[in-house]
Image (cartoon, rainbow, N blue to C red; front, side, top):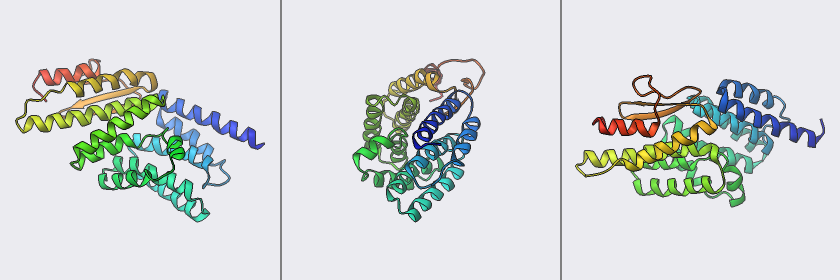
Length: 255
């Protein structure tokens, strides 16, 4: 296969893998990505990154962060051995997201702050797969509310201005979680606070999600989360919007 044809083939197949992820399942997407990985001549290249980053994304959102970490470490070591420090830094950057899903918030922040030293043109390219939205939540969980909100607002602005709508639903969902948790803590400390901002972001996440991914929003007790290829439920099967569901929880005194 000629180099130009190979590039076009990989680009088209990666697009198909994203479509499969968004509208069928992570498993179908991964099967196509695994096939692409076998066609890579060198695992420590920018082309390899373009393929494997999609697999890492899938593994994280499919609740398989341990496998994502193992694959990322494998690629970091391969890049280092090949002397491709640029690609090694790209994979290290995504450890921010992987460590977030693994529950290692300090490590997530470490790799996020380290990645800020990458050249701006590289960060622009890598921004297709957000790390800032996860870093924001990690900062909050480590008690740095001010930094969490600063990183969150900056990343949401970047996603909007670059038209990265595939990541917007996740950004809004994490924004809702951050604002909800802040309001909940303040309320428990006796402050007169509102959950309006959390409701706003949940509603926005609910509006964006159907455009790019089939999701199930689950709100159980005081936790809300999302997973692909299902329908919304809130302690009963009736389908309602995520924003409306949060309003019901607040009105009912559950939060």
